[in-house]
Length: 580
Image 1 (cartoon, rainbow, N blue to C red):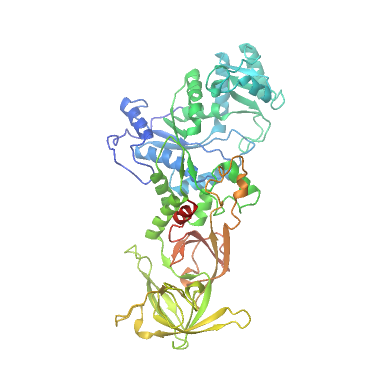
Image 2: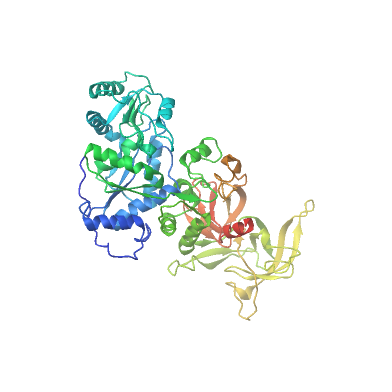
């Protein structure tokens, strides 16, 4: 496939303050480089990017940053973007991961249209490119073992030395490479290497491997191939075949850029431009796909979509919105240098989004019953409650109120300390949307001493939670009518790790020992208002005074399950202050 001209030429290159929902402002170095290329007409005014995940796991928040940068920039410059699966390692790749990646990219808000590619579909073309390099005496078949190859490679301070097979003739190399493809040699016995410079200060240029023999079943191509190209050989040529203009990569590939350019120049084919940016690092988590795979496969979490994981599937299940993730990626910006982003910044993004958009409801997580002694027996009132005071178009709903209600157990104390502004003997508080109530007495379990009932009286003149006589109460409590309450399970999530930087907490330390044993708490006796009875999975709400919650996919007609997305307030600042 030849690259095609795509999109219209940029008309925004002179704006210096634009920001959008998908990416950072156009003052970053990537945008500057793109605008230089547009000004010089390097790619005929085109901007065409790609996101090339390996289908060996689920996408995580670090991938979200890469997607927002590559796809967001293409959108800003009226260009195109591709989704390409780098599926050249059959040992680790599965169709499940392909489908999960597509689902996550779409959920994040990007549509690659018909531009879905697979590196494995270029295998024949890549093989022909390799033959071309052999014919140009720029590649050779090598018989060194992996250990021997490492020895010959040299170090950062000592040059490498030529392989004894480096000067094989073109004819011999072509014959041997054909034999590799035809399965004539054992796995690992031979490789195809680029012939560059074994004394180069850049180790990536010291005759890197292009192909290895590997008899493994490929999830798309079965057993058609027994040799597979390396990522370094696949990457740039795939970009070229697809017509990509700007190949935006993790900064770890900066030292690979000379090799990227060498292959394209040696093959004399269309040459995109590689630009690198720093990867995302996040406190109290790990983002390496291999480490996440260990957590999943060893059962430390409940699958790739566990809400404790930084995978997009886990974050979606926890209640994060795609808008909040894009806004987070926008705020943290683009840089060349590695930096560590506080988890609180990510939580701020979702809290800010849900504060504006999530409906308010009432739920009691640790209930204790309140009986309003002077409320008419059998009476039920339907009270007005606002759905979201931050949204003038959100409207109101009706909630039932009756003689018996539930409140949070922590909202009552028999002997309260100073500045405890909730319910206590003889004290009056406001019930949100309802009435003022005053505590008269309590009933306790004779064996345990635990409070099982709180008896109160109410003021019928305070309907709606307001008094006309001007008296003020300091406490406002949320509640649920006992007669109408819906039972629910609520899962409270904490960070998956106890250390701020689990991979760097101690030199040589096992990062797994920092797993948080209290990362999940399950509450089974929660009570929620009846409007939530038929809420579908991924519905998000603010539980008044308790935080933001999302309906979990485990919900069934018999059991309503909620995940806490984030608390109402940032708790990380307090934690960090304490650690200092």
